[in-house]
Image (cartoon, rainbow over all chains, first blue to last red; front, side):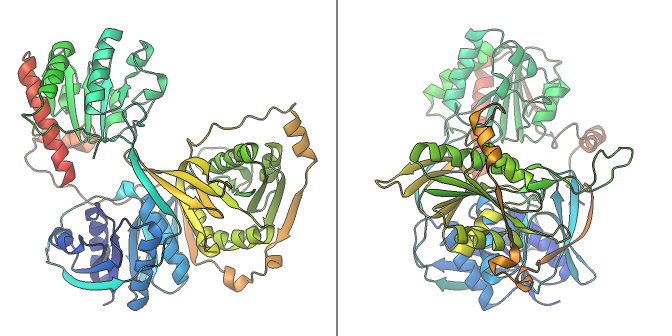
Length: 329
Length: 288
């Protein structure tokens, strides 16, 4: 096949979907293309090239403020109408999903959402998706002519650099937009008190090492500075340090933040199953033999009190570092 | 204000599992999609606040889902009948429901964002797109604003603790999520429940809505439903790991290669300094 396969590059997170389209392009033998909307499009080209994109459609809309999903759908629909691809992939994020559905309705094309696998088997594209609350999987094929639209579940996407790196060919397009039906009033980021543990970028975890409420108030002070929600182990919950809703582990939440700061946590396996997807772990614990130090990237063997006090003091002095508020942007 | 709530019946898991005894026949309707009940709860509390009526609408086979909604306090219920053999995907649902909705007339359509059986989140947007009206998905808070109560302010949940606030004029579609309200508890001795029992469900055939089977033919076809299999994942390249660590990585004991481990013992000042350095390093790494 010598047609094109496309992916819709969402602002800020294109590498994962580029990896997916590169994998599919290899199977079908087609040109792997990305669709970028907005002014930043051309600057993204070298980075997307590393993940296997060989052609980039840089769409520039007539207005420059924040675009709604409807606007994206309008642009993508017109682009597809101009030169239909074989497949167009979207990420199954709130934005990607809405854009995909709108495009599918406007084009009358077939869309399969939340795919966990996509394969090109003997000339036919077959998608796999979860069903029945994740208990079963369905294999689905299209009954209508291409373009085939797909949204890919975020949990299966991973950005892996391609072996062959190209600098993508850039094709520029311009469209004028109709007025949007919804009005974006504002964006807010929740503070550490309201932030759900499962959504946070950084999480503080407390364990039985924080013996009492005086220790806890110190931790809360740190949480406020770092703007991270506080979760806890089962024991911390039973000691009344954190509420039941904030338990992390087998009997609570599974979290996947960028940074997890485990204070006074030994790292029992029931707790650690909930923190498997954490990227960076910092552990503060008195006991050097605690299993949490096996997975911690930074281990601090000490009582938490002087360490946290020192962190707070140094943070307030502040200017030596680019003091990042983890959940603030 | 007339609010239509679209609810979806869920059928039982269709696969025979080895070593288990099935207590009921496959394909039987077992419950209502949980997020749709959140939508119904929100519709009822909006009615309590600003008045109007709540009508539940479903494309399905079983009347009991709608009866449940009636006993929770809905004013009317309409079932668009579907053949049990017919394959149904979001394309057909979002084609049929708008036709039925525009026949009833509405100011607001509420539905769940996420459908548990098909595991997709398409129908809300599909309905809005077919009707040509505004839509906000993943709603976790709905406020009625404007002098004549014809504008909604809706908070949309995005990943990583972000919320977007939209202003939407009526008529519109709002697809809701859990966390919008507390589930309603309806006591069976209450007036609401008993009044619900006396109401009736209106049945409509798809053909009555002027939809021919050609338009309705599904765009996708299910080849096979099987028990969950893990996807063939792309490999992870690891370098600089000892054999023991590689084994532990395979066993899933460590999440990622931990070749950069650092341990600081009994030096709070230095530990704090290192901690802040690392934090800022990881923070900037996320940005790039």
